Image 1 (cartoon, rainbow, N blue to C red):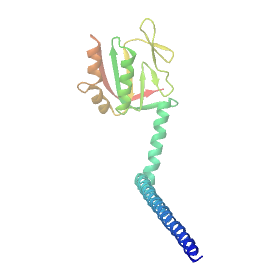
Image 2: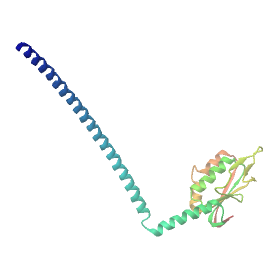
Image 3: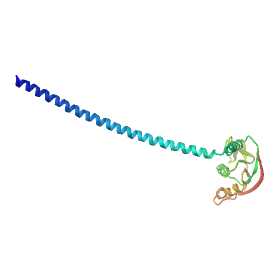
Image 4: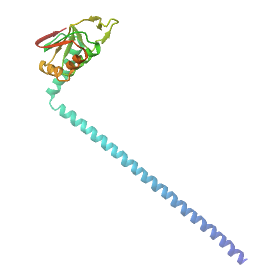
Amino acid sequence: MINKRKIYILVISIILGSFIIIESRSFDAVNDIILRDSKSDVFKEIKVLKEENQNLRDETEELENSLSSLSNQDSAVKAIQDEIEKYNKLSGDYIVYGPGISISINGKITSPWMVDLINELFHAGSQAVNINGIRITNESSGFDTLPKGQIYLNGTILSPPYVFNAIGEAITLQNALSASGGIFDRIRASFGGISISIDQKDVLEMK
């Protein structure tokens, strides 16, 4: 009887010891998982914080730039008025007056070169441009080439000489177009026998 009790106690002790070992290992495994997940969360939080800090720096920089540009209320209002005036000139809703240049191209050129020349004029600071009396606005439909080679703009067939008028700072416009390798040199190189003249004007009117 005593031997059986000892055997039962021994068996129970072994079983309990096994449970304790297994439980301890399971706890360690769970602890490792929790610790790993905690580290992972920390790194995620650090990444989020870094991103938020960068966003805050970007927003701060934008606000500083805005503050700098709007530090003087009068200059801000003038900038807005200038933009409105610029839009009104491009819209073609108003007659525009001002100094500028008049360009005469005697000879046939193709519509892509006309587009290039107009783009050059606006890029150089022109406030308004017309060609053979037709004003280029944001409503212009663009240039088309007819079957016989004529150039068609806003319902009108253009014929040489092609006269481009541009309102803006005359010397700046002239220098931009007449520069070595500029638009005038490229047009002359592409079309033999063509002549180009340019005149500065004190006052131009565009309807």
